[in-house]
Amino acid sequence: MDKTLRILDINIHNLSYVEVLEKVEEFIRSGQSHIMVCANPEMVLYARRKPEYRDFINRADLVTPDGVGLLLAARVLGHPLKERVTGTDLSESFGRLSAEKGYSMYFLGGEPGIAEEAASSLANRYPGVNIVGIHHGFFSSDDEKEIVADIKNKKPDILMVCLGMYIQEMWIQKYFRELNVPVCLGNGGALDFVAGKRRRAPKWLMGLGLEWLFRLIQDPSWARIKRQMTLPLFVFKVLLQKAGFR
Image (cartoon, rainbow, N blue to C red; front, side, top):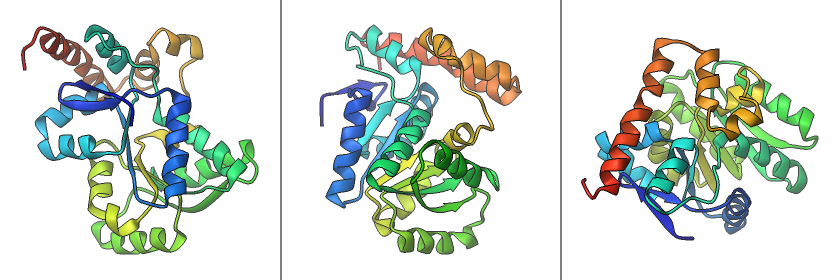
């Protein structure tokens, strides 16, 4: 794996988008289990309070910078990252690769019906996409054995677990070795975007690093506002790291 950058005790791999996809295909060809994480500033701060979360991320085989805040932090620390690699963009590329090369995918998460809509949307854009299983994210602990059995039976190359930050990663940690999936990825709200339930910011706005503002305008809830308020704290802590303070 290429050189990593450590931002507030979290390892971020410095790979371009193309290099990440090459690594994903390498994982699939190996047939062995691998964990991917798409990290953002909120996750990094949360990991500082949750040692088990920090350890999970730092043990992952591939951690991409899914958040413009991490790119800015890398510049501040003097080690720029090559590129932002988001979970939503990866979902699209996984669909394309699946249609082109037959890689199988399984979606776990979202509200009832969202995973189905996401699968249908990908099928429309990438005819031949190979989605072997889906299950919504509103399940109880009693349902987990059945879900795990279904994933093991379907044997996907890529498992996207979209249960929300921390919950999805801890779910993957719990069942990772039993599932034996080449690529396990916690992917937050990606299914909502793939399904078209949420709209992404225009590319020019993303280029300015203002996708967070677009999301806030779409969802001006207190929960979203609280999430965005973590960014100033993240910047402050990165500046402390730059100054040599822990």
